[in-house]
Length: 190
Image (cartoon, rainbow, N blue to C red):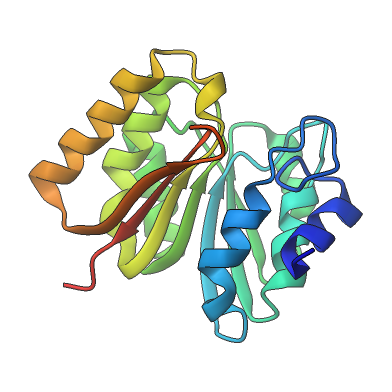
């Protein structure tokens, strides 16, 4: 078992293989993020206050990336209890472009990784992607989790994301994993 999956299972996040509804995302994450493990990593994750797994993904990422700067974005003020060294929390609505821009104004861009594990409403996912993908650094990753739980037609949401990419960006990878539950997008280097 890879290191990230071991950490996830120990901490009880659903990103691993053991927890309630374990999605096994860590298998893909370990594969694509392994080259970053000993580097300084800037990560933004939308949706960090899930009451089923409170703070588990933050703990997982901190243990996996020893040089991590992490920003959690959540609508629930309960997420503020996760603030600690190198972990900030921004309270806002992922479907509100003003909140998304305020987060970027406060915490900057040039993200190595952005993960959307937020509301799972298709409109919110598209709004967040449209407003945040500009701030992923070249060669960085934008990942949308739990497409099986999207409260809008997931294929339509994926087409909307593809349309944004075609209009504004160059990507080097765009694929789904884990039975279509995980959408992985890698920004091109140029």
